[in-house]
Image 1 (cartoon, rainbow, N blue to C red):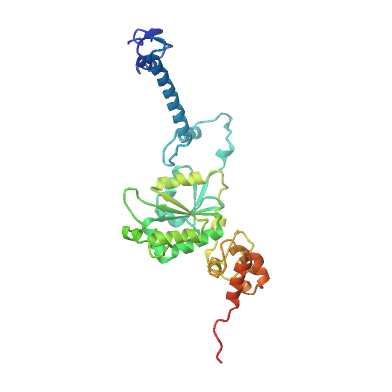
Image 2: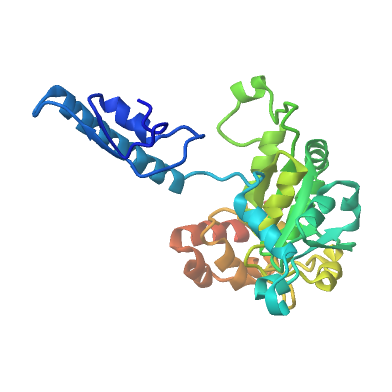
Length: 345
């Protein structure tokens, strides 16, 4: 068929596949309205085959529409929306009026030691205001409640071995509501947090001998800590942009004034009032968690009722029962009031 070449408006065909070819003209042809009629015998096999092909084509289109609704979008891929937004920022607008979103400067507080990496430059390329400040907790402060500690694979291994990462996670959880640990790796290089022999011989409980066990223990001790795996520094910048959407801008003065050295070492389990919310003594909570009868459900009610480890030890059985239940309260009360050593007779 050469209907597009001779500019026909009505075509009669005897092949169902020819209709599809007529609907897709060659790129060089000018689109024009065209009516196609299929000549088949009534109640013939060709008629039902053509009708079935139309039904299958409709189902395929519906399936593509549903798949697109649940499609996973990578953050490191360029999209038409980002390009349109960039062109809108560079174009002139009549009257000089700007939207509220354009007037608010997107800011990121970056630790000065992080400028040895390319992440601050990637943030600058995405039109974020990079504020270099020496911050004692975290490496990046994205908003009032989001703090990120960035670790490469060698630094992650060293921090887990020395225990420094545990202290950093504890400080972030004390001062920020949404702490995150960003782990950057090179997709071109393979790495493993545990060897094959360790995985094959793994016991039921989580151990602290290998790196995978240490990361598991870190997540168990700090449930609010979120792990972010990043294959590149450009992907890290895109993740930061997504995390900042709809959030308040960070305060560099408040981020620099956070002093990780004044952690609550007075033995109090409840956090004191101040700019830091939900501040707790993680060491005292770990000790209390290991006592007999203490469950994750009764840990914090018991801590609020006692106030400190010494206060928990002085609680009567009645108050322990209200916080823990009769069975667990009896276990803890007998443990705290049992004689440590028999007297010399």
